[in-house]
Length: 144
Image 1 (cartoon, helix red, strand yellow):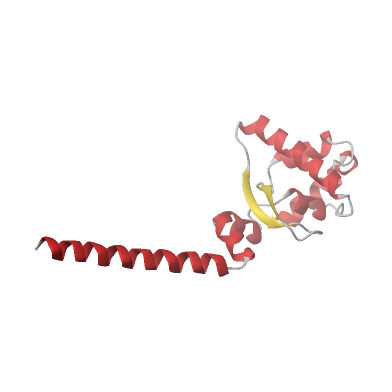
Image 2 (cartoon, helix red, strand yellow; image 1 turned 30 degrees about the horizontal axis):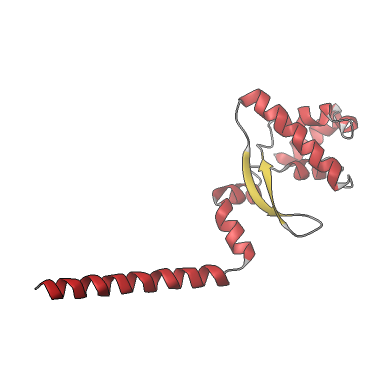
């Protein structure tokens, strides 16, 4: 009787290890896109549906997509600072491909109507010219 329990435990352990090996093998062969999409979960779905936007999306809507990557990055920092000041919490993050390099990067996502996006425009010197009422109207129209 004792021997049969040992055999059962050994069999169960071997099956569990087989399952773990299969999962690891599948994870190693999964594409990067699938892996990063799985990490982002529901947030990436909301971004793709337009319920959440990245700072680069707002700049595209305002016609400022020609800004250098460094300037866009600083604009994002200003937006994050304004968002934290207004809400007391950090915005959600999502993994996306960089628009020029193709590398996977972690960026913040916001509601299209979050005022931090527009406060960031007004406080950053490279985007201050975009903080005009006409630009706000264009962004709200594109978001709706």
